[in-house]
Image 1: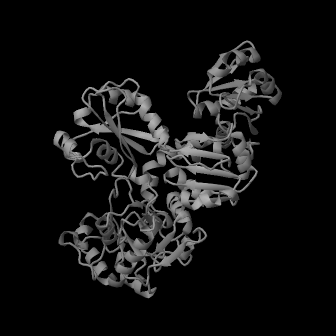
Image 2 (image 1 turned 180 degrees about the vertical axis):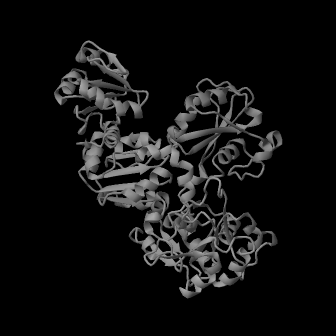
Image 3 (image 1 turned 90 degrees about the horizontal axis):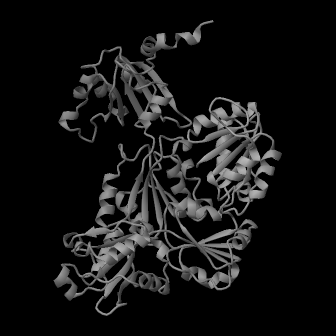
Length: 606
């Protein structure tokens, strides 16, 4: 945001200094001299002349001066710049104009945080936790349509908490947030067939879809994400005049929004076609060009022997649209057109595979145990998942208490892999979201390899959300830096050899030669062997820590020396949920004090 800061007084110039440090592109103006100040002769005249030249104005001084300066210039919330007023002492930051659309509310919060001030925002949605519907286009990159004369009427129904239906026919980052943060007066639907019979129950309909939804007389706001791929085929050197308008008109007639098109694709034989260039220019995209070899295995709805003989693929428009969409489904089959004689063309639409409301499995790292240590993304998935399957013996049930009403929450502790797969696939095949919750980070001793192989075999959509590993929790709870300059710069994550064999090159005694910081998982039951192998290279007095149930309410940590490791584990009856840490890095702060004492000793002079 291009900002103008107006300091009414010399004190205001001082208040502006931290703002300039955080917003280096901002410009500071004042009638008073000062460092970094651009001098002006008269505040109101300057504002009148430059009001639209800046995206945001920050007045530092009395509110009256701010109001009198902008009052004659105010036009419309969709065009006015953001205006904020800060008192000269920096105690209050007030959003004055263009709070939503202009970004004044967001900037007010940022400035209040920067100055340690109180943010003053009067916008109803900001103060009630409701959605700012008029910001969705900017926030999520969606196009907005409405059947009302303007957005104000349907937005008012929502903010007045009248019954609202939310139809989510697709999914992306935005829809995930909407599911998670919906107000009590909003009911979610996932198909128009489910919603249509109940339209009379609602005063407002919100839709997220690339396809037009007709709610009749009910006020509707439709949000259109750019999740469609347009595949194009045409005769050689097809004359493009009027064809682009025809294609867009047909797309609208068939119920889709051209604004939903985010990708344009064709085969390499058509890469120099004028029609392709004109379409790309209108859509504001760079065409994606594919070879026949890339497209040969793409299934299409309308295969053509003639097209195959010429191009080597069974359908240019459908295959290129699907390939560009990550092999998503065709939502508009091949359409043929000929605006001018001899200039025939075809086009088709496919939806991004990732945006289809189909089944998905999110493998989530739960962290070491404390429910507050799961990632924001991981918790967001748990709040909207239809099935939460968690490793009950390792993951606290408290992590699942954020599940939405009606969700199925199951522990996998008493289930074998086949039973787990069967349950997840049952929900997946219904187009539902499955959250598979593993302890720590699922990629470190997380037992997800077999699950991913199963998902791959059945072509199932899945993704991994990482988590905080117990070795990181160990470093935090031990208040130790596991990498210390000139001492150790390597962390080894490993386990002892129990029922699971270790590769020969990864035997503990070989890894111990580096005397690095070593974090040993799942090895409390074979601690004598672990100690013996480590003593082959680590000195007996090397610090060790046995960390049980890190970050759980019953966490216990025992420190000692390597020579006593087995005794520590056995005397305290520690189990497999114990992390063993070995190395000089444990509690080592003397080295740091020697390295940095001279640099910081001036801080301790009296």
